[in-house]
Length: 156
Image (cartoon, rainbow, N blue to C red; front, side, top):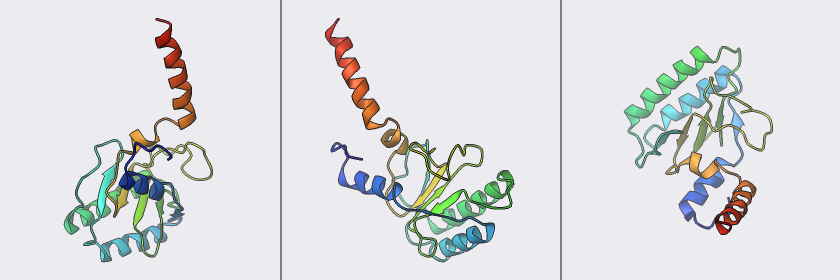
């Protein structure tokens, strides 16, 4: 993200979001990740349901534990595969940022894509910012639209 209209915290969040992630490929990898989160449940985690307003405060330990329980149940119920592969962490051993993809809206969440779908939920230690606003329109598309819009406005 090169837009200077974003503040440093937003830029840091975007950089972390677009950083390197590793999949909890198998269900036992996800179990291990959840266990690490449970062990560090008091560390100020934010739960962000993408599409909703980003939270301004981290959740309590109890709310994080409840979220882990419920999202785990949802993933295992709705992702009927013998592998997980839809939860990604910046570091599986000491996670700071976790992306959880919605089993009903996967698109191309794995592999390479210039425009992968946004995750359904994020667990992060950083204050999250509105991903839909930050990621919606690629810069080249914005420039195209601005150029066209300027032409349309100037001819009226």
